[in-house]
Image (cartoon, rainbow, N blue to C red; front, top):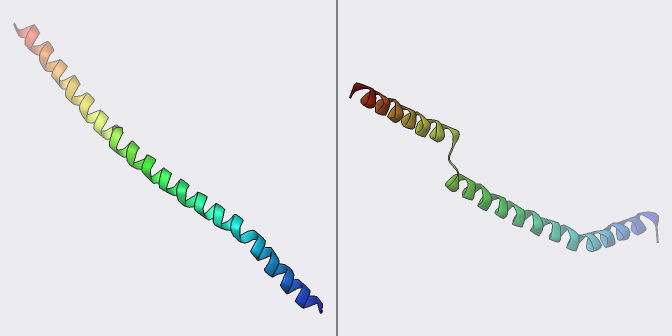
Length: 74
C-alpha cells in the first residue's frame, strides 16, 4: 500500500468518526437558533420600546400639568 492510499483511508475513517459529532453539533445549533427566535418574539411582544415608554410618560406628564392647572384655576 502506498503512502497516498494510507492517507486517503485515514481521511475517510476520520470522516466516518467525525460525522456523528458534526450532526450533533448541527442539531444543537438549529435548536438554539429556534430558541433564540422564540425568545426574541417573546421580548418583542412583552416589553415596551423606549419610544413607546417616552410617549406614555409625556402623556402622563401632560395630564398632570392639566390637572394642576384645573386645581389652581378653581
